Amino acid sequence: MSNEHTMDITVQCFASAREILARRSFQMTVAEGTTIGMLEKEIRSMSSQLAELPFMLALNMSYPSRETVVREGDEVAIIPPVSGG
Amino acid sequence: MISVHITSEKIDGWRGEFPGDPSEGSEVIFTGLVRDKENGRRIAALVYEHYEGMAQKELEKLARGAVDRFAIASLCCRHRIGTIPVGEAAIVVIMRSSHRKEGFAAMSWFMDELKKVVPIWKVGSIEAEE
Image 1 (tube, rainbow over the protein chains, first blue to last red):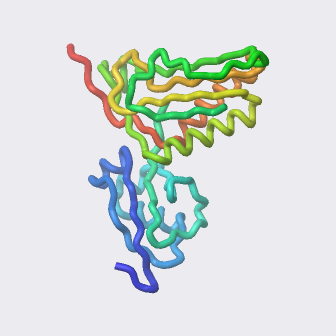
Image 2 (cartoon, one colour):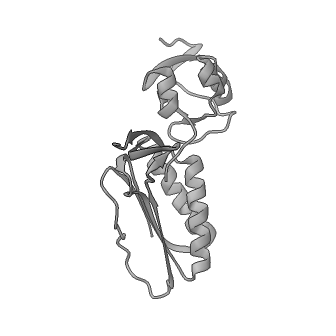
């Protein structure tokens, strides 16, 4: 639910983050002006395992700076250490 | 020329389709294969997943980075996802350049960076039968 002070975003979970949270994605309501750095803290507070996981956050399929502000409808993804190749 | 593709199809033996250029004297090919051991246990296959859309985007960005930094004339990459049996390729990268030196350097850089930023994960393995 959105009002003038909050906004809804979607969070995608991959690999170990998906196992920890036991879901592929979820909706999150955050305050206007929330930055990626603030969002990371909020996500880490959801689980003690997540608090220790060295993940990065992606925003709309790119790696943002910690100061980037999220917007209504954005897609954020929890990116645990990658292991391709 | 840059060609990057993520697929669930088998990529072993893939050679790319390059328009030839007589100025390119070097072709470096790297094939990453699934090993028979993972965390000390014998396995039959590895399972890879990716963040659809972003993995392709990041691979393309890396490919452009390699081409710009190392004077690579053409780069083709195929990364396989899904269940990949032991001995089969998870990735094939082909780079052409004037000389071998830039080809080796670019390949090493590309693979190192890929393992830092491209959202592809080994998410499980299938144990080998005893």
